Image (cartoon, rainbow, N blue to C red; front, side):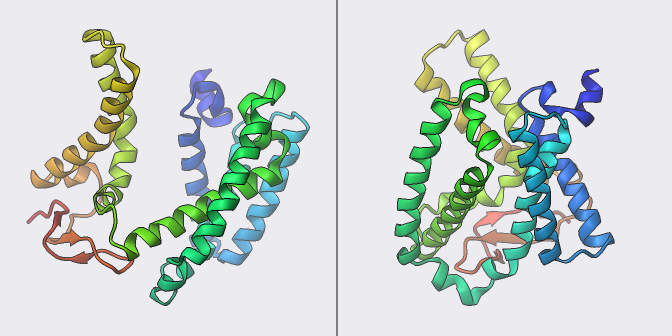
Length: 261
């Protein structure tokens, strides 16, 4: 039954349900975008409709299994596709890296987070999912503001060339995402079960650091020894990537991508 739930009701299988939802939405979006040729504007409208359906399901305590999550988060895929050209347009860099946007967004973000936490702390049977389930419009607003301030803050970091190490982490983010759960679980087992360490701040620091650093090391090791097929179907080109003021990496000499011959 657990294997069937991976398809029909992924939340029953544990807290990795989002991976199933992410995969399903990715496949569905790829089909509708590439095969059915549904443009970003129509995708956005479809996302709004699906989000409204998921909101109805949540508010009325219905059970649609994995479809609820797919319907709910499809909208965010469509928004990303809709605004991608605008965000990546070099002409908009100065506009998006302005404190005139960041400061009001930060104030709004803090207010929304405070209200969000207040509602969820008294969420009754829904617990910390109360806003998501019973206040879908507020949840959508909070999510979009959070995404927007994250993008704006990233532009500010780029503009002032701050926290440059984050660019290295960002370049490897997909590979970190693929491996971090496995690595962090292994680190936790070793530290807690074998070494009998119970100091929480130490565990948090070491496990989180392991979940970021070790996947980066593994990826570069695999690229160095021509095991690129673990991460991609195509043989990588011989090039390296460096931090840059542009929105796309350019060949340079700082961070090797694991070039192979």
